[in-house]
Image (cartoon, rainbow, N blue to C red):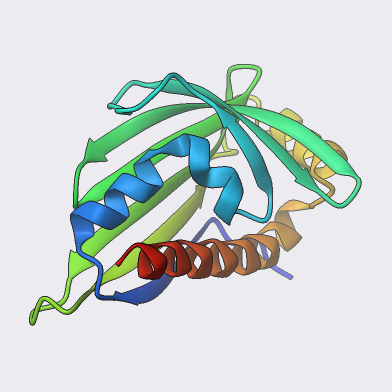
Length: 163
């Protein structure tokens, strides 16, 4: 299987506006409720802004690891993006885009992932990902696709309960 360097998954959330969905995602402390891999995020209290730093605690099966993150884009109702890494080396860029339906009845939420393990330190971060997360770069795309679909479905469920 060839290595893929990016992925996007989307879900349409009926009855939710972009600002409300952004508020859910931008409260990083809640990410553990939705993501099947991230079980907790340590971050200062909201609001999260561009430049906010955090620590993500992750697990999948018997594998447990941490990442450090920094919010790179925080535009309420439009986009929320953060980079994660380990030991000062880049691993991935995660993002969310929010697009209201033309008729105002819902919002398309798109989650994106980009592999940043290139250049300096890429061999080390690739090895760390395989050892600590239990996933080779070639399998990461399938793991992320499943995780993104699960995360988006759980966000949509949360938004529906609040509507």
